[in-house]
Image (cartoon, rainbow, N blue to C red; front, side):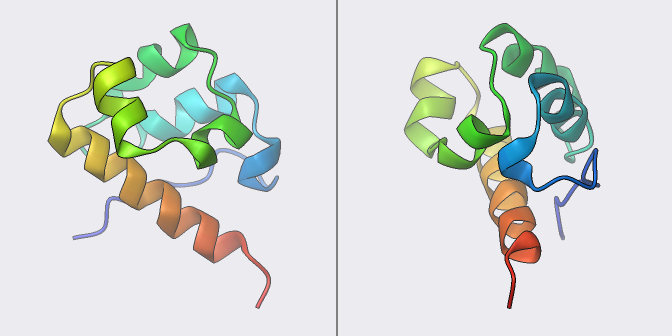
Length: 84
């Protein structure tokens, strides 16, 4: 099953604000309650695309399942937005 959330804006993910990221994370299956962590850490679109599993689990305190869902959704989004 896809965890892909709807992009909060037409802009490329690299250009998203912290609030765009918060809206995006809220839309990922099983992750809506984690969105505030992204606001607290001031994760914008560029930072979101650079996050790895270690960042999400060790530094942000996410559980493995939601961390994997966020990474999968973010990678899928990034691939969709890349020009062919």
